[in-house]
Image 1 (cartoon, rainbow, N blue to C red):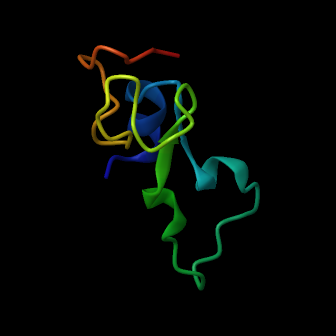
Image 2 (cartoon, rainbow, N blue to C red; image 1 turned 90 degrees about the vertical axis):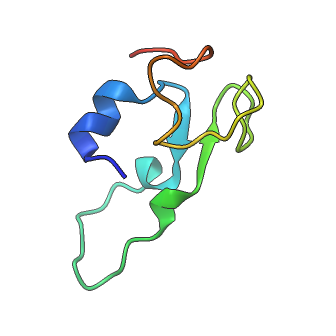
Length: 69
C-alpha cells in the first residue's frame, strides 16, 4: 500500500475508503484494517466505471477513468 501523502496525490479523486470518514486521532493500540475496503464514488461499488477493481493500487494515473484532484 502507498503512503498517505502518495495516496492523496496519485489516487483517483473518486476513490473512497472507510478511513476517510473516521475523524479521530490514531490509536496505536487499535489495529488498523478498515482501509483495505475501497469503492468508487462514481459507481458506488468496488468496481470502477471500466469494470476493474477500485483500490489504492489500481486507481492511478494511466487508468482510463482516473480523475485527478
